[in-house]
Image 1 (tube, rainbow, N blue to C red):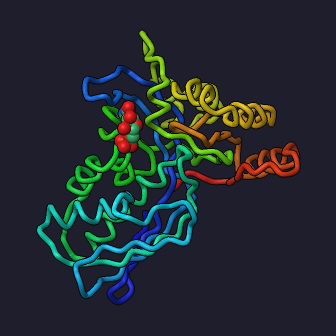
Image 2: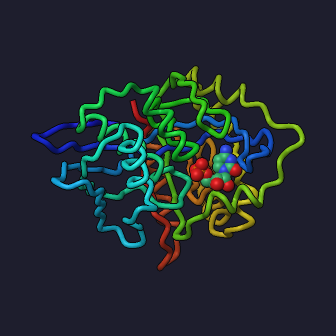
Length: 294
Ligand code: C5P
């Protein structure tokens, strides 16, 4: 996440994330699930521009169709939570440039919420530390806290217990987002919780050592199977990517984006071109070639 300040305005560039491993440990009494997941931020960004208002309103604008700019948007909820906890009455205009696909397993909404907390902390000169911002973030959503600890972390609990890790080598990925999104709650509902959860030791070690082929062999996501049952597009694009000789293919988060792990940047572009050639006329999956953030 990058924050810049120009006069009274603050601009935040905030990234998407992918999950390279996601196992469900158990269903909790509160309806959530305990997870073990490896999350990595990648170079696909939303931009938020914040300007102070003379009144005490929180206003969000976004040109993206299909995105609510009302009080239910996580950006507005983040701003209101911060104001309430800090006892502030200042208003803010927030303009969002949306590039991260929505309902796509890339945590765009959570990233925007984290960016709002970080940006307003700067604009209103609150002096809150990462720990405080991160714990406010966790109240807004399970993977908001991660964005204060990128670029890579091993996350447990609901996803809000974040242990940053060092990536031994940058990762080159191709993201393929089908035209249909998935609801996280529905995917978790359709999930069969495993009796013996899979260990993430190998995948974590491969990521830390920068052993990309080993990382590719150990990619895993427990939510893939229920997501593919709910949405046939996920399986279709996963299959197409798997045919492109990548090091590994996996759905990110609760879908619907499918990612391919490439050997290097040139390999990632090769995979993206091959995927485009394999697409039939009128098919609308969005393809991004990205690198893990530094
Ligand atoms: O926390 P967040 O609002 O992102 O979660 C969306 C939904 O996904 C939750 O309401 C819950 O149904 C499901 N979820 C879960 N276990 C998690 C994270 C999310 O069951 N660890």
